[in-house]
Image (cartoon, rainbow, N blue to C red):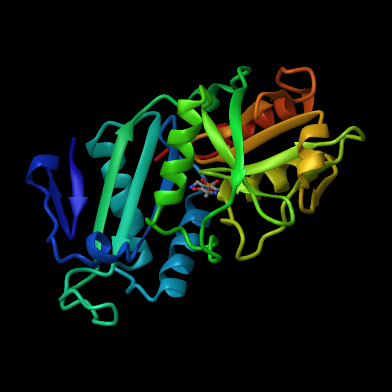
Length: 283
Ligand code: PMP
């Protein structure tokens, strides 16, 4: 493969970053992930917008103009022959002396990778996942897509140790989000709930797209906190992200959700998303 690092296209073994990089020393970095389906960059614009927002909110300098960045993203997909897969982009504030308030001496560090990978969700998977439900121990600016992912790594590893695939977090109000996804619950009366945006969760690009598509299709989506009781009482639960797309959740903490199978509303959202992607133009 070929990756992009600070203006250069390199094989991974020739790409290196300073140990003084503030991403390495302080976790002062943010990232983005784009889904690629049949050479289509899914939700390109909303991820770019969130990237800008993460940079602004964290005070990390903007590494490139948008048009230049888009050209590089597309070139990376081509160079790496990605038909179905993802693009990963990371920006840190660059290298400097190890001081909390010190600023980086050089430019921000920009890394972009593109890889072929099959995401089960891309074919509207019927198989659901089993997850842990755990307290959200993260910080209170979860709306910034930071590379400080230790709590997510811990939660996902703990879930795996319990034989589960992933974790869903909750706070005092209810479900916040998945460890790398947003959460939707379909209640008895077919009302679809998902937590409203705030500093407590990441504004997922897939979340946003599914809300729009579902509403256009006449479904009743309400941005409301899902309490723990509602989560377990739901007929269907699903998670969304650039790599999960729309994935059914069938067991939470060992308790079966609904009839333990992908529900009709989940299926409908999967189909709406698949249609939306099919109508994007390939690069
Ligand atoms: N929440 C968290 C914590 C995530 O890491 C992700 C995936 N990056 C999401 C939600 C979903 O965001 P998106 O739909 O933009 O991939």
